[in-house]
Image 1 (tube, rainbow, N blue to C red):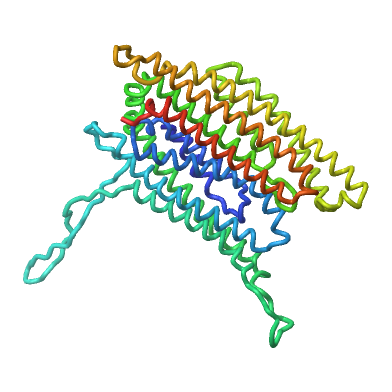
Image 2: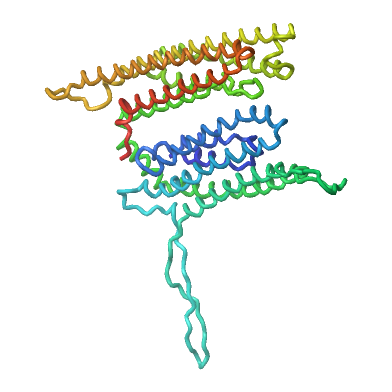
Length: 474
């Protein structure tokens, strides 16, 4: 367990958040926590559960960074939209953070299962005194005597404060936005000097931010002292390292399955973020997000097949072009609507230039996704033989079983490629059909949802058929 990385992860959570704007992105902190507790997560169920939840939080916070683009686009027209975003993100964060933190701190003591060792870093003994009365020279006197000792869980105290701080920070993020709910009907008597609560929003944000910063400093101190105590004690860290080297390191298939599961997660996220989500004509899920996730998946996959580097430069080109298209969309729809092409010649030329660039972007995106899937298929084919029960009998043939498994996986991935092509064809057609056929957006969304759903189904099937059996916690 990397104590320094774990402390750094929690420290990065100390700053206040304004709606979805976070100066120190929480995703970095959560990714650090995930990396720090990877070793004990292999053999401690509670910590493995915590790691899974923190990883989901890291992905959520990554989405939250890009949500700034949506807020900037919509908040000028709808003042309550930041409140909606802050509330939704806040509730989802708490649903994951509270159980994750409880599982992490409570799971620390489970790391020593099977070891007859007293983990002094996790608990401390506190003396208990009592007053004893006795008579001397006819007078009653009281003497303070030691009655015994009791153990206090340091992990529980720090855990409770960390949860309290995060809950307070979420509430502090939402509270200033509640002022936007105040509405005036201007019926009856109106006072010229009367001010709405929304006018005090900057002052409220400043006040709650200062409180969060003060509580955040306390968080830093408590977390640093607690995990610093564990590091100095050395017992827990040594137990984790020894168990990892003895029980986990020899299991090469476990590491392979874990990595491939991460490859599938990032590819799945890349597919999800390829969905066309428009606000006022602008696609806020810019292709650079999907490209970055695909590149991450490809880099991980390249460990097993060097051909996985092929989709990376293609995805980079797509990402750059998507940013250009995003800027062009904002510029066009700030001045015109879709229908402007019918009566403004300049708008028509501008729009169809934009549509052409969008078509080029989606063609490149299709090339990147298909090349990745093909390499992924090759890697899975090679790894099928390494996983599962490796026996050959008259009743069971490993070779035949693997051939059947690959046949199922291959057919599902080919169908995924077909849906991928349909998705990007409809994404391109969207720009040409929307001025003439308003339902084109709905049709494109349906195709996109089917593509996402089938891809996730395919990845889950591959995980169940090949890798899931290799991943278990002792």
